[in-house]
Image 1 (tube, one colour):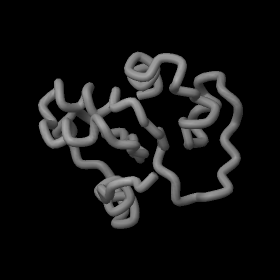
Image 2: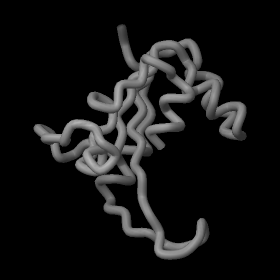
Image 3: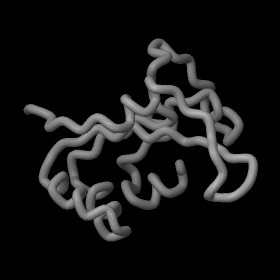
Image 4: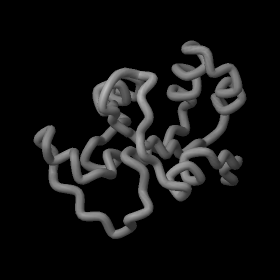
Amino acid sequence: MSTILEGILGHAYQPDCHWTSQYRANAGYAAYSPTDTTRASFTVPDSTGRIAHWLSHRGYKNAVQWTASRVIYHIEVKSTESGIDSPFPITNEEVERVSFVAPHKG
């Protein structure tokens, strides 16, 4: 996911800031010391609309309305034991965090 975000955002993506998971240390980045344990795996602000553009071109048509907005994406990464159709654990809190969409004022 970090590589994908870097491809979308270029230098605007900063793994040491936006990769808000303890697993970033496994990729050679600074260890994450959470001050807020309710963060998603990635917490990425996008005021340019690049992520919305990327999403809309991959089938998520609702994202096109975000291209002119300042959006903070909370991306939760989960692994499975098998393929893409395998179940994975996710808490109610994680679902709520990554499902909420609200306009950002200012």
